[in-house]
Image 1 (tube, rainbow over the protein chains, first blue to last red):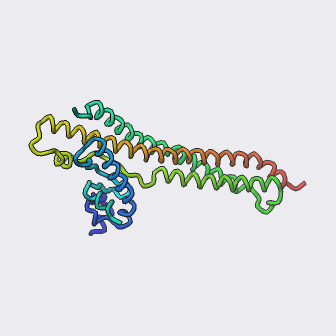
Image 2 (cartoon, rainbow over the protein chains, first blue to last red):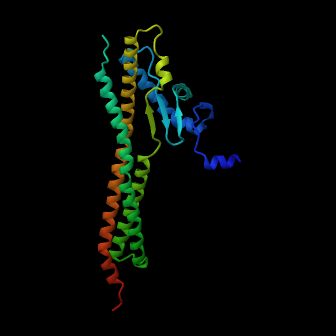
Image 3 (cartoon, chains in turn cyan, yellow):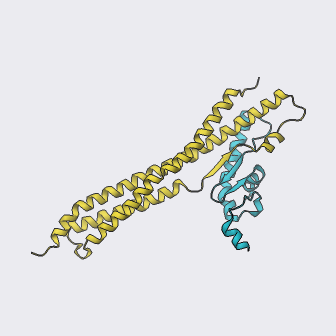
Length: 77
Length: 174
């Protein structure tokens, strides 16, 4: 019945980076790095101890990427 | 003194919200070139059934074929631009509540907590605004080029249709 679930249920949010496909991670890598760099610069400008932990949402796959997952994908080679 | 005031927070929050709303406006406006694209394909089929390819050496026929080819190229280029306007867009959002709270220094006074939240949120809105601005600029550019190219395609087809009577007259036997 898994195929029925796949067909009729809306795609679930999968925040775990290890469950994202390699293609999705590769596609999002640049956006993750760019956002982390922007966060670092704004934290430097405002003298924040830590950069803001923003959330990235990928519309193509319907995946929400919290800061941890985002940084993990951005750090991949 | 905290360099980030409520004015900064409100300013960037408004910019962020308006840029996010603009994203949806751009998405809605893509429907105009898409409608023109459908019409253009229909016009193409009308033109194609009228032209006798065997008489391609005649100036009028050759011109129609040339214009038709250019119109087809502009049509495909427009379709590509429309696709790019919607391609691989990601959304940037402020931190989740748990992340916002976890950043707060321990033993901080209420004023310090408010100041910290204000700085983090202002920074988040500023970053999200810039990212949306960049993405929207690219999407709007693709949307505009999609519209321009489909208008060019339609214009070329109009000229081809104007030449069609000459082509049809040449095909009539005396």
